[in-house]
Each structure stands twice: as C-alpha cells, then as structure tokens.
Length: 536
Ligand code: NG1
Ligand code: ZN
Image: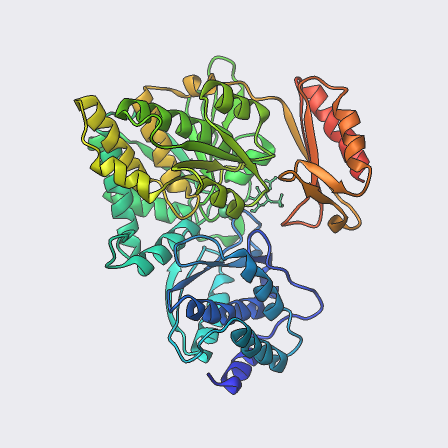
C-alpha cells in the first residue's frame, strides 16, 4: 500500500481541526460540514477492518437518523450486519483525530502493524447513505479512501440503515448455507414480502395503517416494497405519508418516530383521525412507533418500543406453546433503563419471561439478545428487533409436527425469523411484524393498549458543565460518580409512590438525561425535576 497515495487522497478531504472527534453510540455524528475528513478516515479504518477479517466486506452507512437535516453521520457495520466491534471504536477515534495527513498515514500503518493486518491482501467496503444531500460528498471521501488503499468499493447509493446492514450480511454469506438473501435492494424487498405472506398464513389485516416516513429514506423504500406487495393476499392497506425527499430541509421536521416519541403527540400534518392506526419511522428507518387517537377517550396513545417488544414476546411465547416447544428454547426480552417499569413487570409477571437490562445503545441490547434462543430487544424509542438463533431456526424447520396446529405454529415461527431483520432494528420489517401479530391475535389497537398501563414518566435533558463526571453502574441505573449523588437520588425517589429515577450522561449529546417514573403524572414530573436539580 502506498503511503503517498493515502496522503494525497487525504489532502482532498481534509479534517476540520480543533475538536476531538469520538466514535460514539451512533458512530461519528455532527454538522455535515465537519464530516468529510472524518468519513475519509472512516474509510481508512474500514480498509484495515475488512483485511483483518479475511477480506469480508465491511459496511459503511452515512446517516444522521432522526437528527436535523443539516447534520450527518457515519458508522461502520461488521460483516454479519452488526455494529463495529467495540474495541475498534478506539482505533476509529485515533485515526480521525490525527493532526496531519502525514500523521494519519503513519497511524494507519502503525495500526496495521499492531493489529497484524496483511496490507497486501484484498478488502471490500460497501456503502449506503440516507437522503441528505451532504451524503454525496461524504461517500466520495469514502470512495477515495478505498481507492487509496486498493480496497474494492461498492456504492449502493440511497438506502435505509437496516438495508445496508442486510446487504452487508448478504454479501458475506453469498453461496453459503447461512446465506442471508440476495445481495441487492430488490432481494431485500423479495425476502420481506415472501416472509410477510408466509407469516400471515391466510389471516387478514383489518383496517389500514398510515405510515409517516419522516420525509426520509423510509418513504421511497417503503413505496418500493409496496410495488411488489399483493394486498389481496393479506388485506394490507398501507398509506404512506410524509414521504417527500425532494425538500431536504423538511427531513424529520415535525414528523417521524423521534418527534412522536419525544413530543408524545402525532405529527400535526397530516393529522390522524380518531381510531386510525398510524406509525412513524425515523429519518433512516430503523425506529418505529405506533399510535392512535383512541375514539372512546379522544386521547393520544403511543405504542413505543416497549409495547412492540411485549407484543412480539407474547406472540412468540404463544407460538412456542402451540408448537410444543415450551422448555426447549429460551425466549427473553432485553430492555434499557428507559423501559417503562410497567412493561418490565408485564413481561416478568404476566408473560413469565426473563428480562435483561443493558446500557443504552443498540449494540449492548443486540449482544445480550444473542444469549437467548429468541431474544426480543427494543429501546423505548422504537429501535429494536427479534433475534432468532441458528439453532432455533433449525428446530422450526426440522421438528416433526404432531398436529396441524403445531405445523402452523412452526411455519409461522420460521416465517417470522425471515421477516424480522436479524442484523439490526428495521422499522419497515418491524411494522410488518406488528401487522402480522395484530392480525393473528385478531386485535385492534384497543386490545393492544389494554395489555398493561404505562407508569407516567418524564425524561429531561440537563445541561451540565462536564457530562463525563457522571459515571454509572448497574446498566446505567445508578450513578457511581460524583460521590453522594446516588444517595441523594435514592432519598428523593423514596418519597414517591411506585417511583424510579436515574441520571446518566448522554452518549450522543453534551448533556445529562434524567428519567423518572411514578404512580401519577405530577409525581413523575416532580421527581424528574428534583433529580435534575441534584445533577445540575
Ligand atoms: P443517549 O444520547 O446516549 O441517551 C440516544 C437515545 C438512545 C439511542 C441513542 C442512539 C434516549 C433516552 N437515548 O442515546 O436510546 O437511540 O441516542 O441514537 O432515547
Ligand atoms: Zn435511526
């Protein structure tokens, strides 16, 4: 590999100096005009990573998800479609913060040496980006980094984040027994549509579902999928709104899953009518939130990640019983501290399933979900999926059914395992899963809403001098530093009914977050404010 080629290419995509960049929960994410050099350097790291992994393709996704249109971001996807191995985040951070082109080249070769990467071997990177116009410049920087390091490069252009994860796994399993699907966008739609029809098993979906696509990449991609969906087979009636990607400035503006979850209300435009079933995707289509205006009470009701997780877990546990698999495979649910306490209680007490709590960030949840045969994981904000272990999938395929009911359940489980994206949370695939489950259960949103009652809760963002002072233990549920803060929080929580509260430093913003829940709205608000004062 040619040191000069790297230096010359780097000069075309200079870094904006002055701020330390950090590979965080969502990769590098910031104002798009700071990202060109960062993305070039992420390309260099990917060139090392693909070679370290024997030439398997590495994915790079350019997106800032639910953030404003002016932002962008870049993150690395490992060969099986999961997030970059944590140990490598530090190497990414090191490369990106190099002070000159020469230091960058030196660090690149030093890392190659340290990690025993054979630079003469071949490597491959595949890329995707959301609809942000700034993405075009960024993938150019990535492409130049690949060219400078003789790394094969394929640009899949505009994709949802989960589609890029899908393609990464496909390209690395092509021709193998573990093949994940056809390595193309069309292959993704084909796989989803076929699994959706099989999972429905002749059941009919009642009523329509309106999908708010945040004016992001989910809109055109969902429309693509719908072109091959045959509504006569399942009754699906999907209305796509907020799918305008020609005006970049309206991306995530007053719509989308993040808006709905944080504002706890429907997008103002278009406005859901009472009784209508709605859902929202975020800007890169990896989060999903359902909601409706209850026609009986006229109040807005949200089905967030916790609700989706409980729905999926309860359905899969029922299928296990019907398939005669109870006791043979372990189902579990993975949540973070932000999960509503009522959902946790419902899963443990009512569904009788184990719950594991991990720190915030999908990679932690994903990792913990792998410890179950079927691991359901969702963040409250709607990012999540259901992981089916290879053993579980094999059992569904091989087990001889003892009755037509068992056969039905086994085939439904198999189809679900293919419908649900196994690499990462996928709003489009999750939405089809929800529609399948509601149809099987014969449930309307009222039935789903009645499964349990959320504890009133409040999330507040607290500006602090140095967020890094706030260190946590126990899956972020307790502060270990600053000394004494946790005691104060505990004393405060004790004064409220059914209450829980915690504070932690955000991994994506320069602030602390305080979460509180309690028996009543006013208690939850009051508690959140009190804990915010302790942290301030
Ligand atoms: P931080 O900023 O670390 O709280 C936020 C979300 C996470 C996750 C990441 C990545 C909350 C409370 N936190 O993390 O769930 O999605 O962003 O996007 O919603
Ligand atoms: Zn997202």
